[in-house]
Image: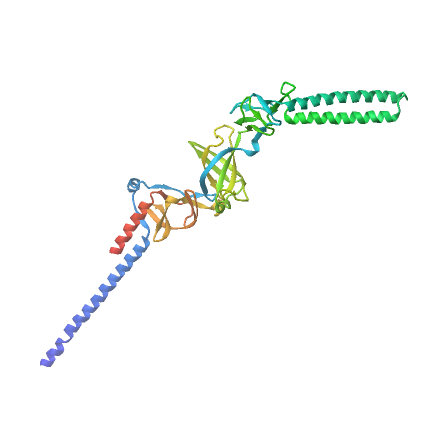
Length: 385
């Protein structure tokens, strides 16, 4: 009887144990399934930041779109200068004393108008030679006419006619030479010992190097006259940057509430001996006269590489480094989504995005570091759980 009772009792605890084991397996499977589901949701939410419009405004996060086209800009200081091709240096053709100056700084002058008068003994000699050569030419022509009449009347031999013709030719050459020398000095001046210095081109007086009564040597600079309807922009680029700037590239010029566009005309093939930088010249339209030679400005030079017209650029403030990788925060209906990107070259305040963005997204452009901090909080909370 005892054996029968034991046999009857043995299956009961075994069944209970098996039931317990079976229930534990189902519970473990349910727990694992929940953890797996939670893990998948956490993976989907990686980089996601939930913020409403009010929170975005409170955090002063500004949004905008990437820039598409061009290849970014290089921002650097520059100086406005007169266009070298539109500037003329007016020099003293002969040495002497300045007895008249007809233009001051800033005044306009037309081509051929007298700017200064120099009194000089050399001027008297030159004008005297012109008058003497003119008289000799008149005499030689008169003798030639007489010999031609005499030869026609068979009174004078042909040899005398040839001599008269040669003398007239030599007198004409001497006269032309004397007048040419006088014209090279400017001529005029109103007196036998005075020479007028004229403007070689129309423009505005931007420099005057002499004073009334001053004695100057030949070739001394008197004035600089420039046509300021166009001005040049003088830039100095690092050799690495100069390779990304080509003639024709646009330059945005900014100074004191003014802005205009210029075009690169010249990129030097050699470095400046003093600065070891590459000189670059851009031309700026100045018909309205708002730019002045010598004025410091800021120039944003368009670059020619990094994808050309299809390049995508964002403000450098839009890029944050998360776990050692660059990231841009793209606006979503519920907040922002961190998107890893690959960066190209930095150009001033912009950075080229090689991959990661299509260019049509709306992104956080300012105060994106607050999104980085918020993302860090979310990851820390996930790790605690």
